[in-house]
Length: 348
Image 1 (tube, rainbow, N blue to C red):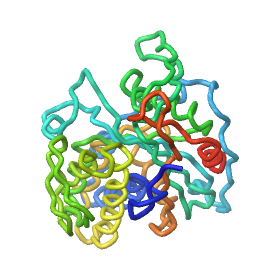
Image 2 (image 1 turned 30 degrees about the vertical axis):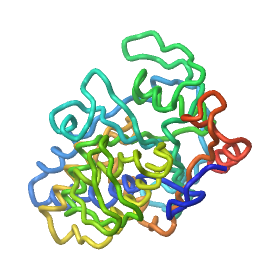
Image 3 (image 1 turned 45 degrees about the horizontal axis):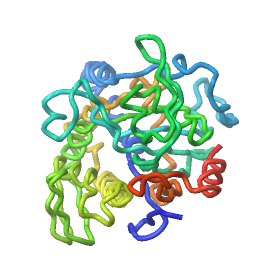
């Protein structure tokens, strides 16, 4: 089995489960600011969020939903406690000067360089984050297009091509075809939003085990401990050349390091005592998010965050989908079976 462990050297890896915990912490800013500013902040943050109606686009031709665990609360609007799966993508899909400066695409070409399935267990006090290497070769299913019609089925396509040809809807459908796991929700964060979030938190501190000199991500770091601003943190998340074998697997290891650093920064920064910074963080998160229609309001995101309040970092397991080199191309990978199938089965 090919993989990366938590230290980047063996069997486990992962990516930004921080989005979920950020939603719980940062988006609660609306409750504080709404009282202080007569609701203006709430409506501004709520208006930041973009959404895609994935359920309507895909219809019923999808894996079955998981068993819903009812809440024990007797209140009129109890917080959800059931298990759920969320497809989380990191992309450069939003055009503009900020994304272009950070290496993002333009309005005619969007990419999803990071993909993970976040499985939250029933009770919402533990979770598993499974990274899917973007270079994984898959059968990309036919996907509906907003303009009508659909894409053609493609065999041996890279996993991240689904987003490029059909956006969020095709990314979800391809993930479901690969895993046979129903994606209950979808979250996407763009390049500039991630960098802005890191800056709003005052940067992050990371330790690298080797020198990094990547002309593609424009990052140069000597081995050791560094405090990174948003632009350099994003460059670290995108770096793969000169790390390990130069593949996406090495980048996943760096992203794992960054996730832990960001979680540590959030846990040591008391945002609730600094309304200005709290608003900055909430604005960064909502301004960079695209969600499915089930999460396309500030209220829905706050409720999601509140339902995850018992989910601590030590209860989040990070793994990578087991892969092996593709027989057709040693620079690509394919799911290793039966290990990959067993992993996905455990998340249904």
